Length: 246
Image (cartoon, rainbow, N blue to C red; front, top):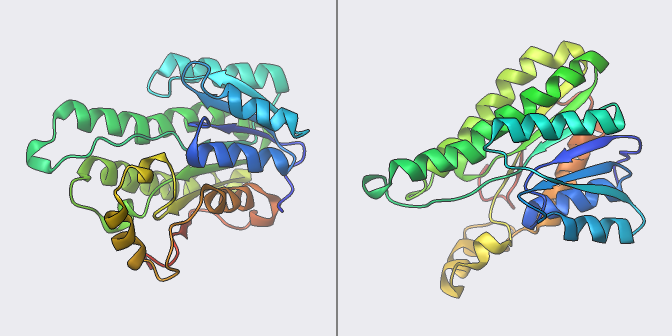
């Protein structure tokens, strides 16, 4: 397992699914995890982390609200004096065919999946630049690389994260900060559990490994990119998709 001892990890969307697994694995690797979610939704995962002997705190955060993001990051720096790892994981879907998609559904997905990553990254980056060290990791999606009918808003937001990753990586590499994306394929989460059995079987048949991934598969990639072992990796998209997209 990657060693994240002494690091402060700020994880958005940490209450369930992939975000929950990322918070758990970062904590198990030695990081102090700030698990962020709306209201007090991240408290259960923090309780589990603390019960296991690792360190975490919950932070109420609305990633679509600039003041909430600024306050959360400032509170972390005030408490710990640093912020080492930012994981932009918070995301939503509002699927619909383009001709039926409402503007508010486009705006909501872009605000949560892409603009929020910009806000969280920008707020933390000031502190990383001062310390000349940092790891920024955004959770994209195979859909942002391959496209998918009925998900123009989601695909655009996840493709946007890849562009953000590559541009920022070039900006801050000389300051000891790496910026990468992890792009999951079909992962067994609440989002995919809504699919019926036939749809899941059809999708699994398109994956060379022959199964959906797990949140732990994605979390392992995030922990690696957050570690010193990945210090020479930046501007990359690490695909965790079982070969679904190559």
